[in-house]
Structures are given as structure tokens and as C-alpha cells.
Amino acid sequence: MIKLENVSKGYYEGKMFHKILSEVNLDINKGEIIILYGKSGSGKSTLLNLLGGIDLPDKGSIYFEGMNLTALSEKERTLFRRKRIGFIFQFFNLIPTLTVSENLKLPLELNSISFERVKEILEEVGLADRVDAYPDILSGGEQQRVAIARALIHNPDFILADEPTGNLDFDTSKQIIDLIDRIVKQQGKTMIMATHSKEVMGLADRVLTLKDGKFEEM
Figure 1 (tube, rainbow, N blue to C red):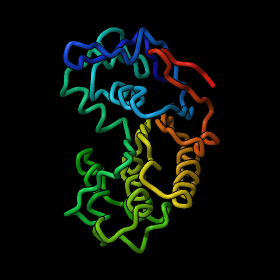
Figure 2 (cartoon, rainbow, N blue to C red; figure 1 turned 180 degrees about the vertical axis):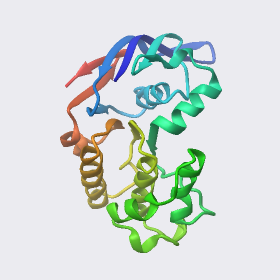
Figure 3 (cartoon, rainbow, N blue to C red; figure 1 turned 135 degrees about the vertical axis):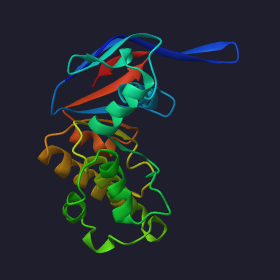
Figure 4 (cartoon, rainbow, N blue to C red; figure 1 turned 120 degrees about the vertical axis):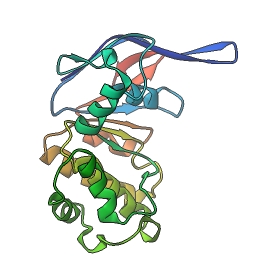
């Protein structure tokens, strides 16, 4: 489904160049869940940004079902993200001035999809009674449930999750992991999750680490 071909990425900090990825190759199969494990600063978020078309590699190509994502224009990559990818973030990134249902309607509106799925997915994540609540009155776990619902509501092909339990306590993290496990696998989604938490290892078909700009499989 997704193929990285000789992908390199780095950045300058002053005159110092930091290598993040060095001619890496990776094949991701449809329906596969990959955990990208490692400490902060190891390049996990950089890889997710490349896979989501937010950033471009310095060298190499990224293919999505045969389409060269790195050859698309910025506008084309934006449309690709909007339709084909769901994002789950560590800090939820909900819009505070919108209710739960309005936050979920936004990706549907952008993709010209009807709002019928809002009620259904809120029931799936256990928040049917919070439809008119604003994010600031929700707990961290509830906000992440809304974020998961938002990531899945437009039926994307690919989920990118960046430290989705990093801002939650242990018990809430376990509930969120169980929820992601159930919904993502139930819907047969492909997912890459970046994390430094060992608790999520049980989700994975494969666990990869980044070391010296290369992938190592655990």
C-alpha cells in the first residue's frame, strides 16, 4: 500500500546538519499496524510528516498505492491528506470554539460527505452523550476519543498517530489503546503510530525503531 524508496531527510541547526533518515526503504501492507518506537528527537514525527505529505524528503520517493506522493504539488498533497489520511495527535488539536459534533462535522464538510456518521461514530467511541459539549469541559481521555473519531469519520485509508497516549495517565492510556485497537482493526485500517511508550507494543504487526537514520525491526 505504501512504499518508501531511498528516502533521506535532515535539517540544519545553525551550521550543523542533523541526519534524520538516510536512504531508508520500507513497505507497508494494507491493514498493517506498525509501531514506530523510540525516544523524543529520534525522527518519528519527521517520518509521519513525510508519510502525510506535510513535508517532502530531501531525496527519494514515497508511493501510496503506486502514486508518487512526493511528485504532487502542495495543493494536490493537501487534497490527498484531506481524503485519504486520518491524523491522531498527542495534544488532541480539537477546535475549542466548536462542539464535539461540530469538530467531527468539519472533515465531513471538507470532503462533501453527509453528517449521518457523526452519531454512529460517537457511539463507537462511547461519547454519544457528549455531542453538544465543548472540548474544554471534556477530560483528556474524552478529548482523545473525539480526536480518534475525527480521524476515522471520513473513512480514510491510512491512520497516522503521533504519541496518542503521550498526554494521558496510565489508566486512560490503556483505555485509548484498547479503543484504537478495536476500531482500527475492526475497520481494517492501515496505521503507523509513533510512540515512546512500551504499553502500545501489543497493537503492532511490526515494531520499528530509528537508529542512525535507518529502520531496525524489533
